[in-house]
Length: 258
Image (cartoon, rainbow, N blue to C red):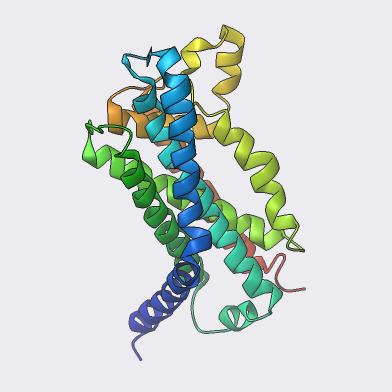
């Protein structure tokens, strides 16, 4: 078999497995984010949003739409990869992949693509829910799609790294609970950093999620607190760094060959 054909078959096999994995239990993977987002719109958008009025020149309920969509994408892209790869490692069948004549970048690409697939599906579902509460007038389709996919890739890579280092199922919940959730909620989903005191604005700039949410908000609404070029650079640098580190972990067998 041609080498590149073999690589394509391996990639498609991993990706298909990942898609079937989360689609079979869609009640647990796709439905909860839609319900949670609906509650956010009802409570924050309608009830609290009416008191807040406008933020950065747009209705408050419109302002929080990009953040809520991206929050669902981040959480699901990350969760899919961390749970799937750790399960493969725990059940010991990931070792069969590592000794197969398939390069590590194909294995990593298959798992990341699976995470992106779930992130995209959930993101689309949440976007459809958003249309019942907000009239989205998209500022830039290209920019919106680019940030959507790049953010999903970034957090799928993060989930892979978490899975490599995890030693038990409890370990795969530590990072989402104590790192991912705080960074997301403090990333400007519900507020503009211009509302913060100057010192807290500077501290917020250390949060990478802030750049992603603002870049996505620019794509949807044309509103941002962060220079767009800087936001895109931050996202691409994180993707490059996490990709290199993930491939390094696979090559060394860290957390796997033990």
